Amino acid sequence: MKIHITGRHLKLTPAIRSYVEAKFSKAEKYFDNIVWAQVTLSVEKRAHQAEVILHAGRQTLRALAQAATLYAAIDLASDKVDGQLRKLKEKLKNRHKPGQSAPEVAEREMDPRPVRFSVIKQVPMSAMTAEEAAAEMERLGFVFWMYNDSESGDVNVIYRRQDDSFGLLQPARKGSR
Image (tube, rainbow, N blue to C red; front, top):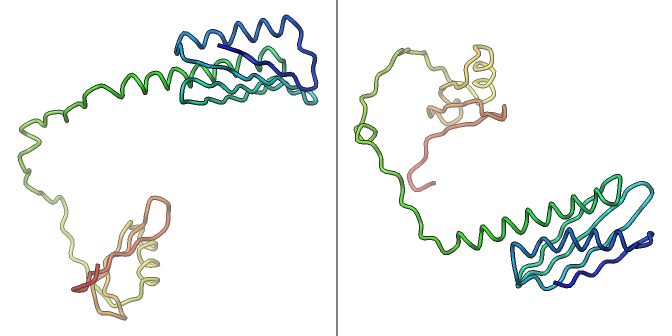
């Protein structure tokens, strides 16, 4: 693998070059078809940055890391590239595996259970608007409220959603969905 190292606003010493080559030559343990890597090291103010673009066959991987020291930025970028290569290798390895069948369902889960109600309440239904129904539901501390819609005369249900907004269930008319 050919590693091209570029420095911006810093002088590339032989120690930095050998460190980068040692770090990124380890990437060949994942793929033997890595063509080349472009490593760009830069310093801006107090932040050191390492950017890596690696070409492995038809894949191009990119990692960008910033740290307080140049060596730490190189380490972070190397770790990111290693993680991407591991993920890519696992993806390619699993691509040719046969699919798994769904787990068997136990017999007792297949049997329909009788529906039992712990509480049955009868509530008077009065005609109101959706806003009035929401206010009534809030006043009583319920999560849903069934009411007769004053405009259509239909039975509607207003309910509180998980994101604290309201939902409204209305009966569907024939031919509408």
